[in-house]
Amino acid sequence: MERVYVGMGSNLADPAEQLREAIQALAHLPQTRLSGVSAFYLSDSLLPGQPRYTNAVAALDTALEPLALLDALQAVENGQGRERLERWGPRTLDLDILLFGDHLIDVPRLKVPHYHMQARAFVLYPLAELAPGITLADGRKLDDLLAQCPFQGLERLAG
Image (cartoon, rainbow, N blue to C red; front, side, top):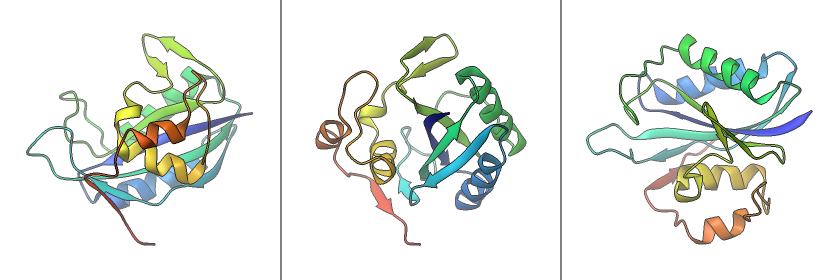
């Protein structure tokens, strides 16, 4: 079993409900156990003019291989109405593998640790709730990444 962290985001069709449905779907993935979920956070979109996102991070323990997990996550996205019309466009659900155990993965369909996560407060702060003090497979320390990425444009949601 590998510990995997999955970033979740939505800015369409009741985003908080989209994340709750995704959490239920993650809990039912084959050969996988949902180990934890961070609080939900509101964040500004990377592109102007879009609604704010609701984001969280889930921790999974899985026996699935990385690309099999990616396929399962994309099936969850599709099941919740995800359409890939534009890069960083609005979406009902986005599920990204952030970390996959101690593995460095660089294949056309998957880069782990997730690229640009170091610049995304909506990834780092929820991840820190689940894995405080973690060192990424590439040797970077989460605490160092947090120090370089202010809690700006984020709002932690209660309950």
